[in-house]
Length: 577
Image (cartoon, rainbow, N blue to C red):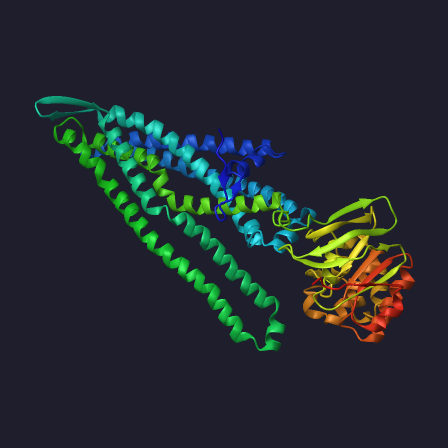
């Protein structure tokens, strides 16, 4: 019977497992390259284990030669070591190179898929709207990198540890011999006693490490979250530098930044306290491991059963076995970070697969959701449309309308009545409420908000957004800029810059109208999209839209009465009481 996983934060059922994050790449279209690189890396790991095994035998011969002052064999042993060391170094370098290559290819594949899933169907918008996951940018940019490289590293290092364990367990069993002990008057023989000592030592160390370090999982999860929140706050401060400077809000921003960093500080102190305990255990374990095998093997050495070279070989083999069995101990801090990363990716994957999680309405409310259908009709029609807030509270009831090609509608109403929410519903971005919307299939719709989005790039890329700049000609771009009275920028089409910082609010709104002209939209929805313009320029842009796009339907949200002359129909929105 399968056990259902739970989300690490909310405790809700979660069907996304760590294996479901790992598996897709290895059965994807890149599986041949991925498995080829993996097999090559594993083969190199086996060669490295073989070289280490040969060095173990070499250490016995080397120390025996030193003890017996064998001058004839000494140069040959040095020459042999040189060859083995050169082979080890060469294989290690290329082994790491292939690991890095495979790790990055995996990260690249994951990043592409997550970006597609995040952006597909407006999922990114619903995640932000419903606050389903914090800092998606960090999860895509950093967590996927950590997940791919760390998972690969853990898997390969664990395989290498198992290979080393098998080989050196055989060496330890055969060279250490049997220990005879007396319990009371009864003699006991313990074959391969050094192997059992290594196993017992590693088990005790692993149990102690897990007991002391377990709280670090949740601490690392919180560490990644508070670090991302602090970084995001600083980015917002930088992006809104001018507005903050106008408000003289530096003191408030400084206080907010300090509060965010204060959460980092609190988490960091917790991290330090538990890391201190963990470090005591690990360092004690590693220091004792240096002398422990020699102490355990010394009775047989002093009894003359072992040569000095064999004693050193046993100590080296014990170290290799102990190191393999201690993989969990040595990687515990990295495992803690990896598990926190996996938890964040599981949470992110889950909300991307269920972006409607918070859009579902409580049975206690009257709302079942707004449905948007694309139909083979020429008009955009609404039926029984009721706008609601995410908590189920009714916002506004909208009368049924039919927006025909070439018609022009003016949407009016007091602030907070739901005018902008109506446009979100028409765009399919607002599921809260009741009713349905039938939109013409294949119609080109453009929604222009009051604050326009200008991506960083060339002016042409900004103007042609969301289309790629090469899909539209420079001639058309210059014509649209001229028409919208942006003549000063006609010869700057291919300049790369942050245009949101260069263009004034009024220029940005004129640029938005130029976009509409470029794309020849069938339906244009303007949400206070000319509010930063004077009445003369505003009237010019509306006349331009009507003249150049005579068959386009225009739906405007505006407060100015002067715009009524450009519209044939009026829709009044009043907030429900």
